[in-house]
Image (cartoon, rainbow, N blue to C red; front, side, top):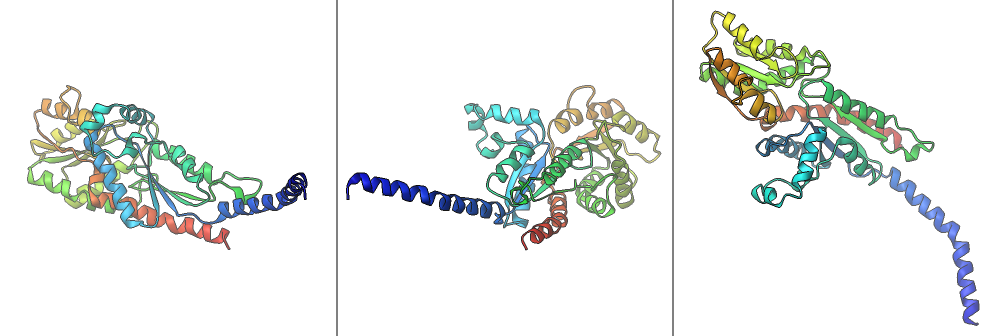
Length: 335
């Protein structure tokens, strides 16, 4: 048989076999889409540019990884400005040399949508998105809208739906004005700060982030719960909405048994820019300066809530509530 005949036969076999190959590829693709991959958890935080504050976020990540050893754990920062700063630092050799313990994932940190897209590239899988925000504010609502939109993203062929099993965990204090069980856990987690203030003979003043767009009564509810547990000289204010430092100072002055000292601490996952500058800074408009100008002695505490294991575990509790709901959807689809 001539080489020409062999080539023609080979070509004919290839052509006849092509449909079989295509069917095989299609079957593989469908199996890839529907074969459950290793589940993933995305921890979405506002983020921080402060090197010393990163430990609070990484502590939460490590505790979640220990609690969910069979899940891939990913970090996402919701702040565009913070992500851009870290991306610029990635090419700063001097910065990286002076900060050798910062994980590479921080330098290439992405927003939640980009992280989720990368996860989806590996095939359909169960995805739990956990908010690392304190309260149900603007940042959480935007994240919730993203996750809900992806969950509703339909395709003509259901098997090709990109996010068939996805859900979002609530912020630390729960939704709207908070839930009692999470407020109770927060009160217990904040016991060390209350004890530090008591030992220092000071009123405890906590600075939260707050929100200028949404009314957040959860802070006043938490304040009331803390006072019930640890005494009346506990105050919560926020950066973005009242009460601010002047209102808290006035309340302290009006209290007959108020001490002449305040213990200032952040009610934030990280002790970042707000804590370092707005709370404890040297500028005249910082909270520390306002209280000092009011005649009070001030002691500041610069550690984020994420470094507090009891607070970090609140996010694990939210994940434990979320996981069975998403797992049930996955089980139903794979019957």
